[in-house]
Image (cartoon, rainbow, N blue to C red; front, side, top):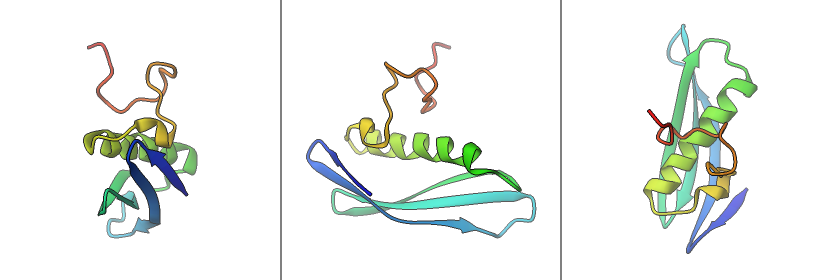
Length: 93
């Protein structure tokens, strides 16, 4: 999966579970953008389901893209149109 983001192309490199804690699930996604490779992780209680970690991972990757100066819509982040997509900083309080 690749997504054009202004002048940067973001490419998914890999996704994997990190199994190091008996009580916590960690999923990591490696992405490449602007000639750099990044890894974004999300953690939650053991037994997380895809409907729990996928939205968290999308928000984390959107935050990475925004921090790198890109367009978050590459991962479906349209905070002005979709109030349920929360990258953690658009809350009023």
